[in-house]
Length: 460
Image (tube, rainbow, N blue to C red; front, side, top):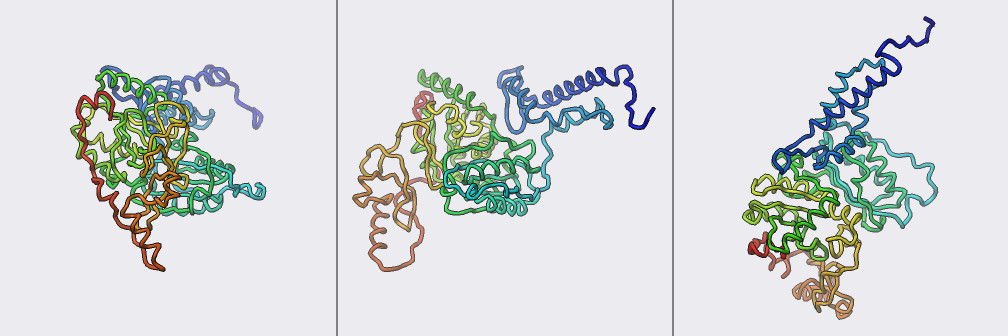
């Protein structure tokens, strides 16, 4: 045989036989991967599938997910690489345990020399919201890379890094945010975990944030519970926006007849749900997400033997919140809206969510429908555009309409209004953040006094 000449294909080895063998190995690997993801369903004898922290209730859904997100892991290598049918199946079984965790951080920055002047600094742009739970070996290294990357792309915003992952919201030009997504998806640390659809986009830009803040924290969303005690790995069942929409529709229909065994739970803060929420939801009157665990503890009886549908802005608070609620073992089942309200509104802008969506930047809110469900704090006219309380002692958010603002009513309560006048009348003086009437009147952790009939009717 001449050097470089291919060996003739033997029966069942080369040519069509080899292709059939690889196709058979791929099918076997695919089946093994899907089989390893089976979990018991709510209905006895049925099965669902869990993968990449998502729960799939239909076989077609898990098949599409595995095909798009894990295809490279399952594909048999070219002949001659020493990998046969058994090795491919081994890869499938390793893949079934999830992608490799704790990969090293790649510190490379994208090449921007081909971009024209101002492309990275255009005022017209967008704001990204995303998170990714994964094991981070060196949070400080990831933090330094994130800071360098954002500065390189002229992005502003806030990024939290921890040993449990990353949570960020950044703003910049569309060229900059697109590059940011591209680099994040190519980062080995997030391989097979983070995907394009995990980034929620809205109109905005770098001007939506005063600066860039990147830091290392114990939690990527501050719930105040050690991640080792309540892990994101114990999260509730993820529902796509379409599935969640159907569940809410069914809940509202049953609730109207007083027959619902479901609670639609908003796990955001009171000032967020005040300007927008799902119809028929239970919205806790809490100021911080770190109060949510105590709220659950104080109201456990409310959740007993209930199906809970949870939602938040982008999904991250539901990851830990649902895990905490599940740890109490009182609910029938806990579900959460995958991608949060952000993703729901992309598909159902005029669905069951009414009002504005609160966001944690200088825009304060974004809208998808024309409903105004909140009122001016002073005159009661419909109004949903927040401003900061004018008292430097407080700086809470306040809803005050243009007419009332023109009258000088710019504080969140009379106490703050008086202090603002005192501060204004002084030539100078140190101002300190402190409690006002608003915070003193509000219980830190409210106990719900809701009758079963009211709850079943969805009028919470």
